[in-house]
Length: 288
Image 1 (cartoon, one colour):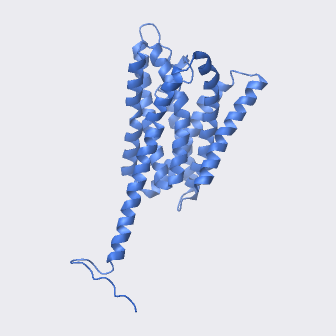
Image 2 (tube, rainbow, N blue to C red; image 1 turned 120 degrees about the vertical axis):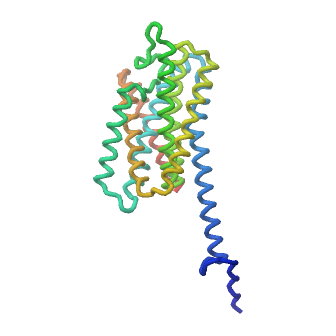
Image 3 (tube, helix red, strand yellow; image 1 turned 30 degrees about the vertical axis):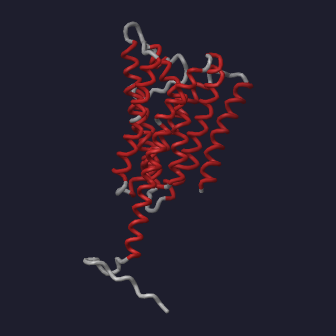
């Protein structure tokens, strides 16, 4: 015998019975789940990267000198893999996307990051000595402050990119956060080194780096609220995210690898770059 439909509640419009309420609960559950992912992986890309960099600096200097170039090569692969294997395919596959507008967003993103770097707000340091932020006489703390301001802006943008990726697809968000963490760790190592050379104590350098890394979460939460009702804009934010990763890898990280021209070193660099690409490829494939 067929069971009668559950009665509507007082003031409940037709067609919005128990099933409708269940759908609303499921939708709210999905929203909360996505927000949880955004918070967790924004912290992974921000605060945990600072902690990992601080632990790395505790290692003996010889170990750091040997390991850091491999971290940089791995970060190049992870960034390029995330851009070309995850972010851009998702942006292109979004319904109603104009390919020419998407290409324009990528181009403007590349030019925008070039301008930010010219303004010394987006410099990356991946070694104990950094020409871009080498403090001149009497300008040590000024250089350190500049590093912190630039890092805060950088982390804010990273948070926006992570949130945009999660709003598109949870798996894409995880891959994007992994790529952010991969390049943040060697960057934070360099930032720590510059702060120490600028006169900061290890404790102060760590505290200030943690504080600036929190802007990753601020950017992510702001983007989550701001882009939640602007689904049409998300593919173009993904395109800018891809341009960010491409710019960092090609304009910032790869030139540093050319300082070593030996074939053995070149082979090691290529191996770690491929390892980063493979990690993103496997992570993206297995998560789907």
